[in-house]
Length: 468
Image (cartoon, rainbow, N blue to C red; front, side):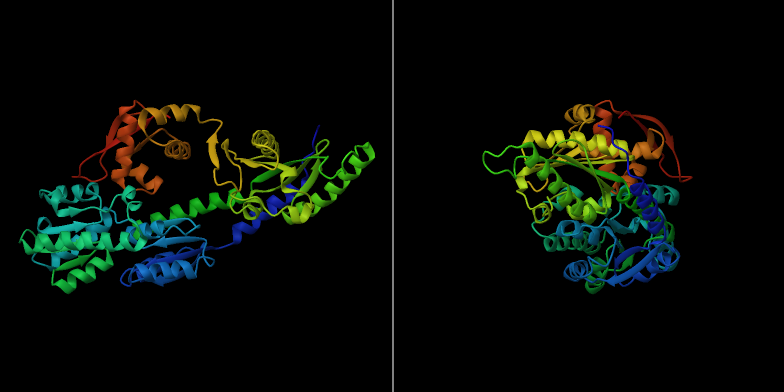
C-alpha cells in the first residue's frame, strides 16, 4: 500500500532544528578548587554553553553533585580523568561525560615553572596520570633520559570494573599515586613530584614531599570543548531524525467468543484508529493506516526516545488503547528520511513478530536492531555486522569497538590516523588505543604507512591505515 509521507512531520522537524540551534548546552563542570576557575574562564568564551560549576574535594562530594544536579545539565565535563572514571564506576549518569586531558602542552607549562623557579631537574621528578607518549617528547627536547619507573599511569579503563565500588576505585587510585611519589622521594631517587590529581597534591604536601600540580593547558580545554560541541550537535540532530512506529494489532483481540462478523471487525479497526490517534498526539506524530490491523505513526526520534526511556521499555500503551499489551506488536524504525525510517520499521516489526505477539523492536539508521524492549534479555546486533563479526573473532575486539572505529574513520574522511588521534576520538587513554591498533595490525586490519613528528626533537608518531 502506497503511503504519503505527512508534510507536517517535515515542517515539525524543520522547526525543531531551528529551536535546537538557539538552545544553549547546559554544561555541568566539576573540578578541583585550583583549576575550576581556569576551565570556567575558557567555557565562558563559548556562547553555546550555559555552565554550572561545582567544586569537589573528594569522591563522596563528587557523587553528591552528580546526584543532585543530574536533571540540570545536558553534559558533564570533569577537570581530570580520576573524577571522570569515578563517575563511570558509579554508573548512574545518563548524560554524556568528558574530561579535560593532560596533554604535552599542560606538562610543558608545569615543567617550565619547575625548571625556572626550583633547583630541580626534569629527570629528578616523578609523574602520575599522564601517558608515557606525552613525556617522551619533552625529555627528548630537554636532552634528558626518561626513566619509565618514575611514571605511574592511571588505572587502566578495564580495571575500573574490578573495583567493587566507586569509593574504592577513587581511594585506590589516590593511594596508588601517593605511594608511588612518596617511595621514590624517601628513597632519594627524586627531589619532587608532578601530579595531575588534586587529592594526591594535597596529601603529598601534608607528607612534606615537594609537589607540583599539573593544570590543563588552554588549548587542551578548548579542544575538549570543541569535541563536546560537535558531539552534542550530532545528538541533537539525532533527536530530530524521522522515526516510524509500525503497529500490528490482533483484530480478533476485542471480539467476543464466536463473533467474527466483518462489521464487528471493521468497528474494532475504527476504535483502534481512534485510540492510536490519541497515542500519536502524545508522541507529536501523524497516524496512517496500512492495511487490516496495521497502523503507522510518523514522529521524531526524540519523542520515541523519551517515551521508551532511550528505547529500553515498552510505554504504558494499554492506558490509551485499552487492549491487552500482548495484542500490540510494534516495530520502530529510525532513518535519515521518511522512506528509510518506514523500511526499518517494517523490518523491526518482522523481527518483533518472530519473538511473538506483544514484542517491540527498534531498527536504527545504522542497521543495528535492538530489543525486545522491556525484556531483561535484550539483544543488539546489526544487519551489516557480519563482516565486523568476522574481524571481531580474529582480533578479539568487540563488534561495538570495531563499529565505533569504523564510524570514526567515516567521520574522519580518510582511513589513516595515529594512535594518539584514535585515542582522542574514542575518548580513551592512548595506551588503550595502541592495544586496539596492535590487535588490528596482528589480524591484518591495520598497517603502518608513515610517520609524523609534531615535536621538533620528539619521537615520531606512527600513522596507521585501517582496513575496516
